[in-house]
Image (cartoon, rainbow, N blue to C red):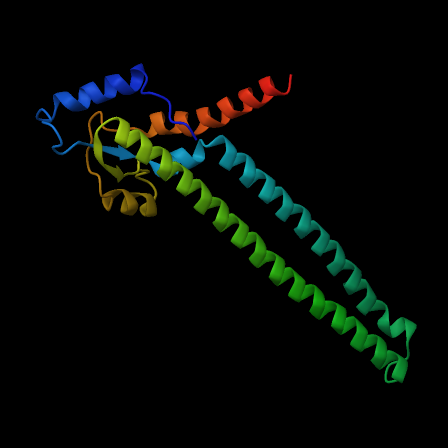
Length: 202
């Protein structure tokens, strides 16, 4: 992914940052900024689309499982109607039904694990992409350290929210947030690639 040159909004932020820091000399220490990674994920167009697709797959799979469970339940209810209890035919049908139920349970568990792995891989790949964009942006703009922080407001009526807020690592920051800039870059790269592809196919 090509990193675009820093635009005016980024320049203004970096100027604001620079006014609060001593002048940088040569290869001295660079700037320190903060990034709300969760917010970048929430606004990452490709990540959101992939997550929506995965959730749709899960929904359809769960629907198919419910339908199969309903059929197996009906089979079990009709077992005594179709075969006399205690006969070899009844026992054979009961074993076959138990095997179907066991296979369905195993398949459900395996598929659920597969979906969990897919979700984890999606988060991992997206994080690597964001990390790469941040690294490129930092190198271009003399940023030495990017700290993760949470910009969401604290809900004073929610104990968990208050507890999480009190334990945040970043207590205060002023004009150091590069979240919007990074979000625009990860989404802008996708849009630019799509536009180039459309132009090439004309």
